[in-house]
Amino acid sequence: MPTAQLIDGKAIAEQIHSETGARVQALAARGVTPGLIFIRVGDDPASQAYVRMKEKKAASLGIRSQTLVYPGDFPEAELLAKIRTLNADVDVHGILVQAPLPSHISETLVFSTVAPEKDVDGFNPVNVGKLLLGAEDGFRSCTPAGVHELLIRSGIPTAGAEVAILGRGNIVGKPLAAILLQKAKHANATVTLLHSRSRNIAEHCRRADIVVAAMGQAHFVKADMVKPGATVIDVGVNRIDDPSDKRGYRLVGDVEFDALLEVAGHITPNPGGVGPMTIAMLLSNTVLAAEKLAGAR
Amino acid sequence: MPTAQLIDGKAIAEQIHSETGARVQALAARGVTPGLIFIRVGDDPASQAYVRMKEKKAASLGIRSQTLVYPGDFPEAELLAKIRTLNADVDVHGILVQAPLPSHISETLVFSTVAPEKDVDGFNPVNVGKLLLGAEDGFRSCTPAGVHELLIRSGIPTAGAEVAILGRGNIVGKPLAAILLQKAKHANATVTLLHSRSRNIAEHCRRADIVVAAMGQAHFVKADMVKPGATVIDVGVNRIDDPSDKRGYRLVGDVEFDALLEVAGHITPNPGGVGPMTIAMLLSNTVLAAEKLAGAR
Image (tube, rainbow over all chains, first blue to last red; front, side, top):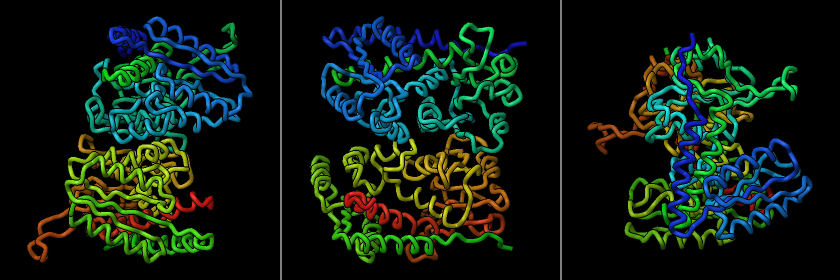
């Protein structure tokens, strides 16, 4: 019998969008329109779809956005020069370079080149460092910030909670650990970061009050790995073959959702959980960048 | 019956100093002398003693060092201006601003102003961010880097090991967690960061293969909190009253050393464990900064 409460990421994201829209209005009264630039290199279809979705949502909130598209063989030096030009453009508040980039371009170099105060993706090392140091004037990367907001707005306490994070990627696992372990309101968790070299993963998960699955393995977290009543956040997006689907595959998360419904206290659906939060935090960050430049924050 | 092997930080630090000295010689052959500037504000006696000790060791290795001393009411703006001048000075490879600073000066601002490539203390957010991201071209802050070297040079495996770090400070706990959880040689540990809001601290410690105590509470880690055979690293420096000492106090660590001698597999003495490593890593970082500028790394 399913007992878990669903964490409705779509509804929470809409709530954040509505707050962000109100902040855009407040900026309009000061004559400021937040401006966001997307940069896409090459023609990865998933990247195209992501960027389109972000553009559309930005427009609906009154954020001006523009997408620059470069061919897959665009020289790294030219990309960096373009970013520097945008860094200096006062009408540009946020710059997002859509990953993955072609292999001849260093993502590290690109993310380091985006000015920290326009790094609405939170990937510049300055912002990552501020996150770990607990400084509050940086930008938090969008997916971990989104997971954090899901917990806060679902009333799930983190102070003193045991949190098991599965996956130590730079996009989710590590920055989320950095957020939750701080001495701060809505943080103060005891965080264990688990990964491919960890022993006793199941045991760690079973002890946790909050399990965050972000390692990119379909259905890795099973019902017997979660303590009854625990919160389960599923960040994974994995393709598995499915001949019954017209694309030949379907997307599934890192957790066995159906089985966990009977064990977890709270759980994110997937899709409809973490996914919508990433865009919500991106646009909120963009407006924050504009607010800071306008002296409104 | 004591069974623990001592981790001789003094001997390991001397070994590193000797390697650093050889690197200084190699640089001398290219006409480069590493230069390190210490900045001290106010007259905190402990800071004076620390800086003197570092200066002396630097000199013994052939590193040119100079200490700038400013009065306790030195304006923040002037300190930042001085740092910017040093950032631009090609003969200066490393800049260390000794903490604690007087309360009218923002440590965050000061550490952010030191150029990342001269930040041999590893406190600039850029270097902290690189540490968390696993980028290898930054500077690692000295105490956690020293703990890491102690583990490596004592042959204590970290891959797959359960590590409990007590204390989430910006100087030790957080950066050490960032070092040990990376997907990297001599890392790959399963790290849990424990702190004042953690529940079940004793239980976490008892499960750990490596316990690092860095929370600044005298004798917090007791024999029944450590698994037999585990490694115990004591970073703490605490003053406790001692009328029998002519100063009226003595310095003790965060662990009950005597009792732990009978339980631990490896343990650091304190003093003589982590302490000497901090200077060793500082001077190694300084030479690294000079090597990088000289194109030798």
